[in-house]
Image 1 (tube, helix red, strand yellow):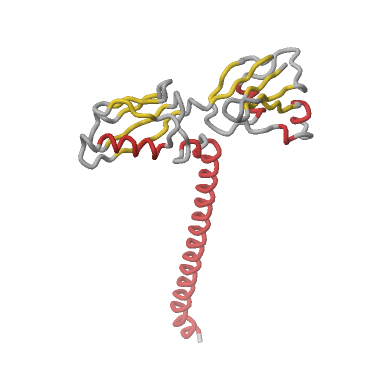
Image 2: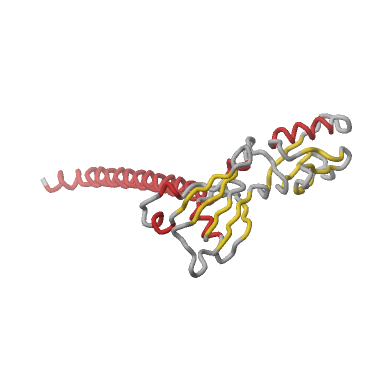
Length: 222
């Protein structure tokens, strides 16, 4: 009987070993799957964070209308001399070698690209042109009155009234923070006055008053 048990022992040991190996492999696969899920979650979180802190990409898209003082980068394939970065002049134009002045203000990046290609066709065979808005300087707003740093600010990304006040360094002493208002120009030359009660907004009572700033707006802190 002892011999029979001893004879079966290697088989039992091998089976147990195979079982342990299989279990270990399953655990390894489970760990790898969990690790991959964690990596995917971390990557998604990083992407969300990057999207939240990067500048407003819509402002740099094909629908953005180039304005005076905006900085544009012109890239002409295989022609470094024609490729350059420059601001749009006060007359709304940019200047490039060979073709001279090109109207830029009032056009989208694709429209400016097409205008440059049309002019280059007279000098270059099948020109490949790419236009990028590198800096938005034409979209500005003002903060006036009893703030630490009154002045003009770039509107390169979505900005609320609270953001605008923070950009201006906050309030000076004796600022009437419940009587702030935003002056906004309307078509036809008239102006709209939009009230902003700082005390109420930060208490969550009037969140609708914390509006998005538009180009040309003036935040007044009396």
